[in-house]
Amino acid sequence: MIKNLLKVSAIVLVLGVASGCASQSAVDAATATANSAATDAAAAKSAAEAARASADAAAQAAASAQSTADQALSAATEAQACCDANRDRMEKMFQKSMSK
Image 1 (spheres, one colour):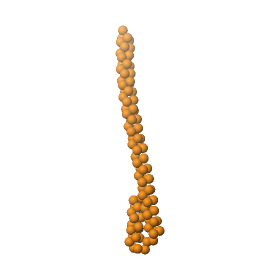
Image 2 (cartoon, one colour):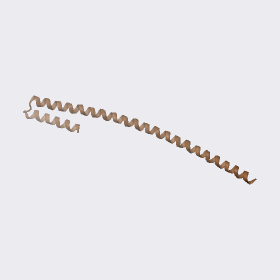
Image 3 (cartoon, one colour):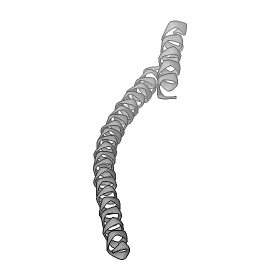
Image 4 (cartoon, helix red, strand yellow):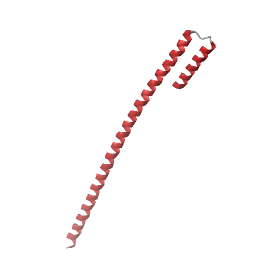
């Protein structure tokens, strides 16, 4: 949209000067509009770059959180395997003591 506004302003400026019926105030107004559009475009670009940096930081934080969750799952799986092994050993000891 800003690029279109810039293009239209430039075209109006060129047509006005080419036709010879443009006053200096019209040329100044067109120049001011073009400058305003350029300033708005620069501000929009800056905001987009800031948003991109924020999104990159969020993606990095999400990747770190996923890594931590994966480590926690691995630890929980190992703990469950240990508990299962202990339960099996105790069950065998109980069965052995009951058979005597």
